[in-house]
Length: 151
Image 1 (cartoon, one colour):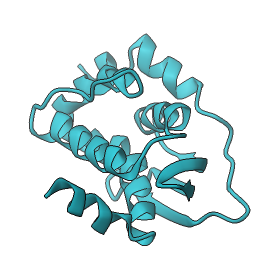
Image 2 (cartoon, rainbow, N blue to C red):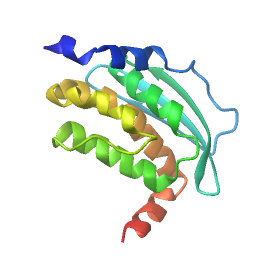
Image 3 (cartoon, rainbow, N blue to C red):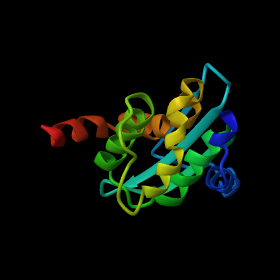
Image 4 (cartoon, rainbow, N blue to C red):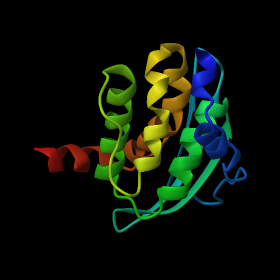
């Protein structure tokens, strides 16, 4: 049942989304839009010494998109590119391939989004923030760095 998705944890996370804040001079920006529902997330990043130093975001999304964006916003400062690419891949696998949720202290709250896997039409809005963050990293050339580190 769709109402199972909107548990207290998801609604609490969505309600805790920080106010929209765009960075004045980001190193990279990216906007991702769900073709299914029209949800939209814009991300601004400043990266210093390979880590996220500042993060701005504007999210016009459903509660599920807001919940994932809220968790990312609370935890992204200090994260490295490799970690964020891996996080995106883990979230895709969790939703689309019945994979486990991301682990570790920084990202463990994302486990509350596991029930979304049963609703494919909700995957796109939930993944927007992860896709936007990685698009920023790609623009900064950190995708090559990340794939080199994996080999």
